[in-house]
Image (cartoon, rainbow, N blue to C red; front, side, top):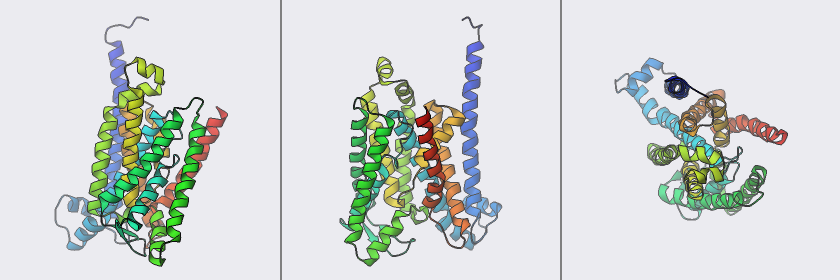
Length: 356
């Protein structure tokens, strides 16, 4: 087929422009949602007041305390956690070529949760409280995150090994994830059995994934891990596109498939562990967000990954804001809302896969 000069570049520029516009729109909505989220709550702060406070212009001491000490850390923790879980899910779905892949469905979230609980209760990585606000005070964040990462990495290695078995299917890997979820849930229950009353109450509260418990120091650790791993994923977007076309095709294009797959799963596991260790289990963000973004922006990872990062942060921020308001003045853990959102989508994806 013959194309006149400039025809293909113009179409390609339009294609790129639409994708970038979608990514930019998502980023703009995220910035707007951040300001609105901070303004809402038991003590209402006007949006203009939030904006002036964030820019360092003194409005009132009361506003400064509410914004900087309470609402901004929680809102940023929601954005970082949502972005991290979403990009981790997108990468897992790509390298495993499994549309149902995510940190939760593959057992990695529960493995990280067990590792964090083990570090806190057995290795002294944190102090237990008896309310949701102080359920677990992480005193050794690197120890806790490291142990959570080791358990999640072991789980990821099992999933990768199963994905390389001849005849393995997405359903087989999901069933393996169900089994691993059950295993690590049983391990967490064993820890709870030997815990005292305060530790038991803390572990129950901690399993309710909640962004309100993140302090500035914990937010810094999560943000650093999320930024570093996301930059690596973005740099390998072309490799993930090639793997989507099939392992043999990717190898023919010069992609070291096994290496890309292992490093991708390793970093996705580290990212999941860093979030779960501080916030508890927040489910379905890593499963739902990449599918939502694919419907809008397509499967090109050059745009899918940044859009998933922004959309994940936006979804969890909106969910966290709704969780703060729906039972005000009581605060509902955000994991409850994400589960209500994600469970029907998960069932729909399974049914659609069976029909195909």
